[in-house]
Amino acid sequence: MKVLIVSDTHGRDTKLEEAVLKESPFDYLIHCGDVEGREFFIEALAECPCTIVSGNNDFFSDLPREEEIELAGRRILVTHGHYYGVSMDVYGVVDEARSRGCEIVMFGHTHKPMAEQRNGIWVINPGSLSYPRQEGRMPSYAVMEIARGKEPEVEIKFLPR
Picture 1 (cartoon, rainbow, N blue to C red):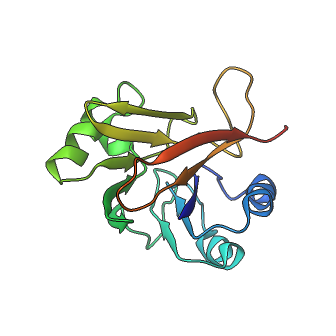
Picture 2 (cartoon, helix red, strand yellow):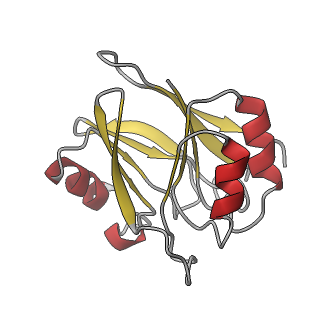
């Protein structure tokens, strides 16, 4: 199963459209918050099942604060991350994922991509397609290949500015 993971698009859709076109077809889309009113556009663009959570800039949104989902037998916590202090460290969100029996946690907020294991939990932040903050400031997203009984494969990908 191919999963496209994005975050922090902040209502700017050009790079999101590029990522969707580049990675199509995919089976599932996850948006880790700060969509700023564009959730219906994202769902239509993806043409597949989606999980979208609210971020700290989704002020008047009915989106959930976080979601627990299961893909290929793996429990995943999807959150924006700002309630767990991810700007300082990821251990709060890792501990929350573990306490819920999740093997993977996905979040945004920092606009800096990462995909690594911490204390046995996959920690995935796709960065930002609209306002990247990592060195080089390239718009980023993540692609996860996940299959029952196999270790997930996660790759951070970049688009030209």
